[in-house]
Image (tube, rainbow, N blue to C red):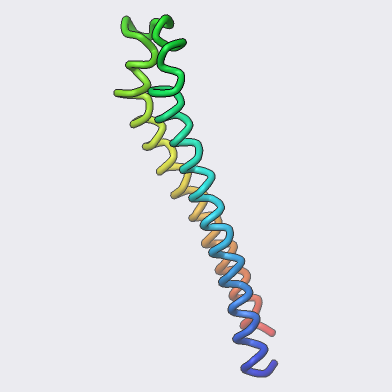
Amino acid sequence: MGEKQMKQTLNEKQRWYWKKNITLILSLLVVWAIVAFGGAILFAEPLYHVRFLNVTLSYWIAHQGAILVFICLILIYALRMDKLDKKYKEIMNEGKME
């Protein structure tokens, strides 16, 4: 395989990796935005009448729930990126064997 073809293949693999990475980040940010803005701001009025742990649900989401969701999303990101990194490493090792 020529060096030009190898660089082109490497660039395609890098584009694939970053596309997966950005897609994951955007999807997790959308979930966090829906919880933070939806639960605490947009749906505050209907959730105000629901009680959770002796406080209104909208208050709980705004002060505790969004933070807990954010921590869970960080954990999900770390686990998914670990899998993606391992897959990318396998793909990169396949290219070196040829």
